[in-house]
Image (cartoon, rainbow over all chains, first blue to last red):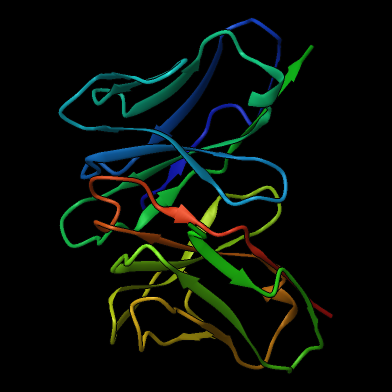
Length: 114
Length: 114
């Protein structure tokens, strides 16, 4: 079936560096994408979302880029902090009657070293 | 505001036992979901509900049942527990079916079947 996957399972960065987490999706019908952050022992928390009619969206210290041509999504975190250490998931919604049935990727573990 | 509350947080079951994972939300959301997360993996949808009295299967519904008698509550029933059901279970809710905003997740219920 269609799925969302990640290129890199782990990412280690130094505090203050910029981080880029990548995600590939295969469902061309997906029109809504979300990034979640999951800290150890907790449920996922919303970071930022983007619709397929956009190619970039910015939040506080985070930017999501969408390339529909190659079905690729990325999350950029500026000036990464130790508190950003977590697992990051991308998720897609195929639209139509999917009723918010998000398909999640495997996740990328981000480790920020002081 | 409590958000999404799950109980219990931890449970150990023997093979063949049954149990119910409780989920309640106080945000008056129509959409509710149950996901499971296996170690090192993303979340997979078990069941979802678009409103009281309406439920439907997700990606991995076998071995589970749900009911939605009220807007607030969405319990997940495990019948005849099997080791393959060892996982972390997350309940989530959303206002708009995940189409225009994020899903709000509970903190998870860690289930071990021995």
